Length: 312
Image (cartoon, rainbow, N blue to C red):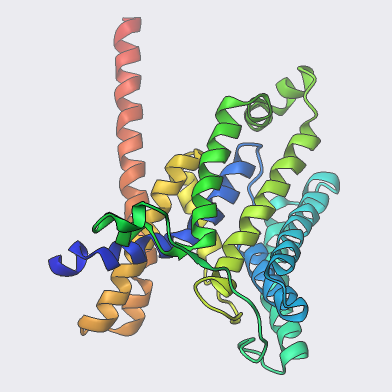
């Protein structure tokens, strides 16, 4: 076990497995900061995963396929925004509706086009390339871990940094955070609340699109029914853990990559029941969340005691 954890291939797999959850967490981070709870991240990723595959397969152009996937990500996010923000529908219900539509709709479209309800392997879809990082790839161990990942993995790292800069170092970011913290105060300060929310929904759609396309055009070269497999929901947990901070969200999403890679090890070398092993990443995340919440509660109680002592 220790030898497995010490290998560079293990940590390479951790970073690779982190990618879709990290992008979904960024999507959750950006909309959370504007006061939106987007339960539709799961369904948006699933639709974009299929849209990118179909787009690249029929045009035989990777970048056109990527643009189509991103366009669907923004479209689905705006559909959520229309019903939840304009029509004032319950946000959670709108999110669930999109997820259910995505689960059944992607299978229907897949079966209509390919004749299969399971996979798009009959289509000649394109995939994002792997990238070797100059100089870093020649560094022992570190190069084996950091270099040679899919292009979307590196884009995800760049997105995380840029999103943090946007939220905490720009006027737009301050406006977005102001809307999320107090809509009435933001509106009285002259901030266009709806514009800020739809702006974050657009960015959320972009991140969801790349997260979904990584699964169907990065780690795999085809779409598979329900291939997102709960990663969108896990992203909401990562968002809660990171409190909307993209850099902390990036780090916290590595917990999933770590637990998912451990799961592969358990499947290969342990005699545990396969269903129990498959549930390990989710059980692991729940335990971590409980521990984090307990720590937060203790810190809060300690701060309250200190404030009470100051008053006395």
